[in-house]
Image 1 (spheres, rainbow, N blue to C red):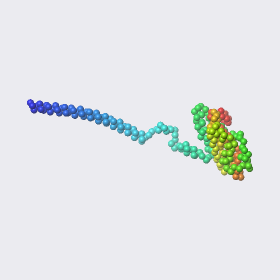
Image 2 (spheres, rainbow, N blue to C red; image 1 turned 90 degrees about the vertical axis):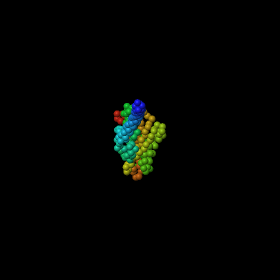
Image 3 (cartoon, rainbow, N blue to C red; image 1 turned 135 degrees about the vertical axis):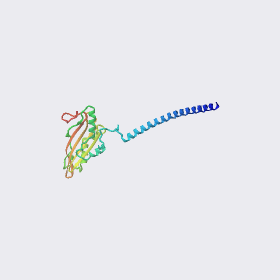
Image 4 (cartoon, rainbow, N blue to C red; image 1 turned 120 degrees about the vertical axis):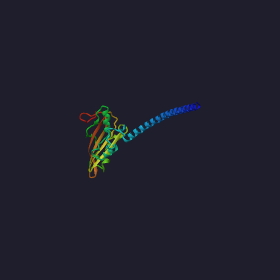
Length: 222
């Protein structure tokens, strides 16, 4: 009888121990499952980062219409230098057209017409000229227009360019940023020639850049 009770006691102890082990295993398994879930989430995040590196997709800051082979603006500007075709190129006019069209206007530039300006005799007479280069002649002629006194007051910018081809040269005097709601800027084109080593002016033309639009004959700003 005592032996039977002893076996029963052992069986009870073993049963309790087994139940404890099963409870403990369930607790540990729950912790392992949580850890496994966390590892799966981290693995998913790493996979997404790897895919983003391998295939970045569309850059939100990238212009979808931008040509990857297109030259940067500064290279385009350098390419426009030293050519007669781009002597009169005016980047501000491009900006004016964009802003004007966005505001509902039709901005543009008038046609070149003869400039109603007086050319000093020493600049227009080949016999009386003392100019050995067209650049000096162009700059002195620009002073006769009198716009240097308006620079910083009524004119924002004054730019001069010259293109020389042998004994012939063309210069432009570009005024921009008028305090005017109609005329944004004015350009003068100066034709020059050389005779017996002296440069002189043969002709002058003028055009205007218009904020709002042009007249029907494209000779005046609205």
